[in-house]
Length: 385
Image 1 (spheres, rainbow, N blue to C red):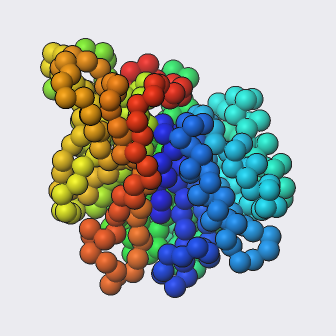
Image 2 (image 1 turned 120 degrees about the vertical axis):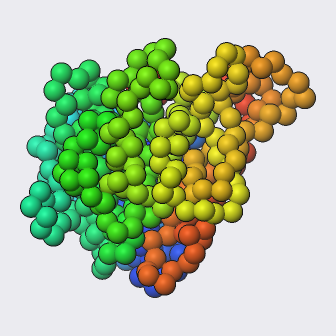
């Protein structure tokens, strides 16, 4: 399970190897979201296309594509990926779309991708009715796709959020994808909002989703505005109600590790450290490492972007900020000239019961170090974090 570095966005590739050993040729490939910065997303697109190209069968297959909702930072790389897959005459096995209120431009993006891969699978439905593979009566869940013991499920999708602003309607209706091999689970919630999390908490009756959620991608890139019930600019942390997201994190998900996709220079200031902290309590202890997050409730003119040091299983796709300037003003915004970003992919291994230790089941794989050259993160989904 690879949360691929793509700038500000989400692109996750599930690579299944029947013998449990990572190699060039996977036995099954599933793509969950495909969006990010046009500049920084190229590496993610290339990785996906290369993995498809290495498949042994003909035609080369990308077995499953799930797009959580319509925002550009979740589907905007589909065009580039389609062009790469077209070069090798690749095919896609199945496509599922989450989210409501799809606009024509995003529909065109998806349809162009389907044309590029000569899609001939089940009909792709925009604005589908609410759906879930988990049932309120507690009966065994179904799935949207499977490969051997690995099941792909929708925990919730296309939730209606009455009276919400258009961006909350889009985000709140995100498909929340569960990848489960019967022992370990990874949950990919797209841009789920507190409304989505409340619906999940209610559906599961406050009980854990599975015995072990190995990893959870923090909803909506760790945004604050959509994570809490009563966000308002200028409120103190203690004036905000965190009940829903805390129940989601500590009672329903209880993740052993958490990750967040992050882009340098992103105008939304994702991910927010105070949101990440909600999920830390159930995570495993691992060797010391660092990650980058935005400190929302800092006082005065303190620098808000920071490299956090931790021994908990928490990762973001930016591992470190390196400020090369010897002196800088405390009120100078980050990123500033002379700042390097160490960026990369977050990799999770869903192995059997006798698999590796916790610290071996999650890995940050550095992709590159970026030197500051000015803003290029043009995806805007919310006016504030």
